Length: 121
Image 1 (cartoon, rainbow, N blue to C red):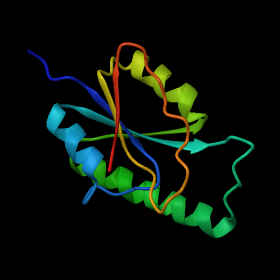
Image 2 (image 1 turned 180 degrees about the vertical axis):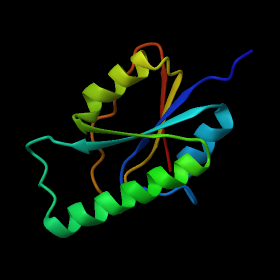
Image 3 (image 1 turned 90 degrees about the vertical axis):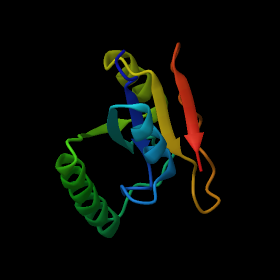
C-alpha cells in the first residue's frame, strides 16, 4: 500500500527544525512543501528588507529540502483558492500547516473537498 501524499503549507515558519505540522506531515508519508506569497490587496505589501529576507529564507529552505530529496513549490495568489487546486492536481490526501504565531488573525482556512485539512500548533 502506498503512503498518503501530504501538502504542507509553509506560512511564517520557513524552517525544517521545530516545525510540528511539517514533522507530522513527514510521518504520514511523502510531502510536497508549498509557500504562497499572498497577493490579497487587503494585505500590507512587503517592504524591501522583508522581501530580501523572504527571498533568502525561501532559497535556503529550498536547498535544505533538496538535500532531503524534497521540493519547495513557490506560488503567488490567494491560499484559499490555490491550496485546494494544488491538492487536487497533485493527488494530495492531507494538507497541514502550523497555526498563526504571535496572536495574528488566522486567514480563512482552505477547503479541499475529499481531503483532510488540518492546522497544527
